[in-house]
Length: 268
Image (cartoon, rainbow, N blue to C red; front, side, top):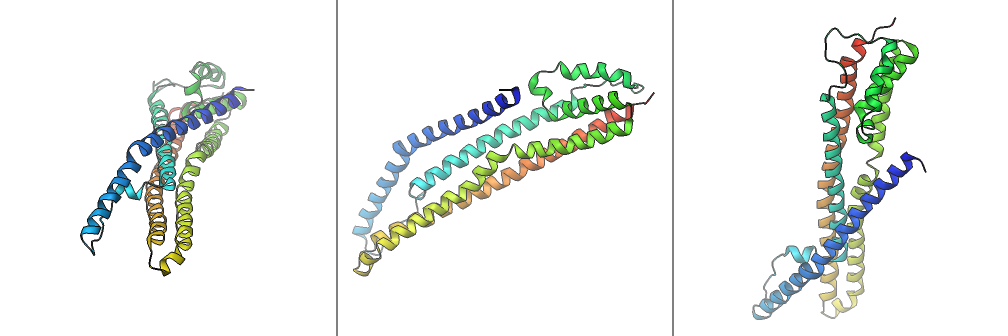
């Protein structure tokens, strides 16, 4: 198994481990606090309604989120937010490399094809995490091309091509985050269908005057939809912010390579 495959498996395993930890913590919170609190609130509201005919119960956050579909939606949403935070930290670390000073800052520095090998050693000696970042990959690819062909235009085209491929690579790494954003409203719709099914099962009792099953089923349906759609809106915004940050990083890396490297290249 090569290093790329190992890094991929390690990345997936770490993200799934985060999901498992979040699931355990949320389950404990639900079992120890959310569901008992919701049942206590319902008992209080039933007691008040029994003493005051026509009383309309107030809404409770704990009742809204107590069902399994809402719990699953919250778990996936928290997982997605954790992945987004991890992604933002990675992008911030990569942006800091724009000021790392990999190339000489002297205004009169000229890089010839014979000098490319020397500059490449700078990137080959970087730690693996930095070596796989956007800026070092773009600069190293341009230097390799310039050292092989001695053509400045080829190096410039390489910068553009590598930046495009890096943008696609960063975008593809958002696959799990996109999945979590997609599955959030999906879980809400599952709750909607289950709630409607329970309401239909209680339709016969409703005809006889007992509307408990119908109202309970419709409550599950509307509450799961409310929670899922609210969280999906938040996650979609976060996803778009990550995509914007990635695009800006690639564009800044391309501009950096053009200004700090391409302008100093000279063919013999």
